[in-house]
Image (cartoon, rainbow over all chains, first blue to last red):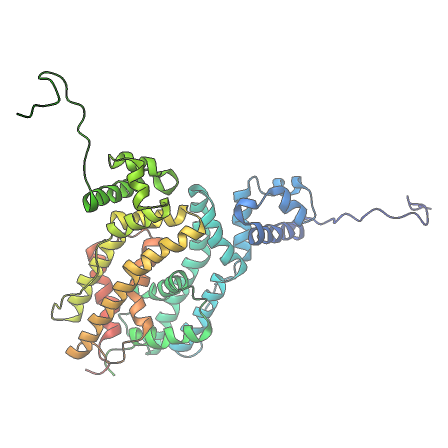
Length: 208
Length: 208
């Protein structure tokens, strides 16, 4: 009969956190995002992330050869997905709901960390992190804005010639500009105002 | 009869550049902008600026007690003035000409230096330089956009309710967004497209 290696009454050693694969990976990415939010890009170390995830440095290096690789994955993993735009029956509501999701991505913990990392890191890393913004926020949201506008043209509440690139950049442009210049965090009522005072007049059929 | 202090044939010493007041000030500001464009905020020193302006360090410190003061003034002095928007007889041309001037300010030597200084300096100085952008570009151009739109309402080629803050932020938002995200330098034809495809439809009277 097998017996315990520990004599009854002796204190058991701390149980190591034995996680593998995706579970451990998620814990490491989460710890990296936590480090970014507290000590920033400059303060983040592979050791600190390993400690935060209660694992060893080797487990981190095995998956991510450099701090830049780790941070890029952590930022990506923390961004909400922009993969579809539900049909709410009208251009106003479709745009309003989509804008709220883009705003949520901008102000997610990853979104905020991304902007501060971009300010701190050198230009080679900046290019990579800029790529995360483009691939995970700029392009998916642009694709969804196009989808929503095309749907509006088919529905009849958007003019047929409102499909040029510049029109699709109006919302991201306003979101970025007001956040940078006025420090706006884009509460829902400001998003509603942007839709009603800019996008609806810009998109509506000219003759009615 | 007065005689020269230098015997005929003796080599004269280098003539010191004796400038005063505004002339010397302009030379120092120009040298500071030159240093910013070549060695950046991190590399700029009061000594380097004095050398560039062919004057002494004391002449620089007498006017600007710190590097931050000097750089703020140099950046301001180098920005083109946005003080009036001529009436070209229609909203399209008024906006087109005004946008070109705002673009010229963004891509002036000062405008480019301002963006790179903001990226390099600490957050206390950043606040000050951000103030230069607001006071010298953001606010004056916003005031001119309002003037041009009000003129359009009076003329009849702009709808009367197109005067909310968000409408005035569309152009600066697009200028900033495309410059940051796509690296656009806004050639004239892109400005024309922005006016024709975004601003004219956004501003035109709804019933015609």
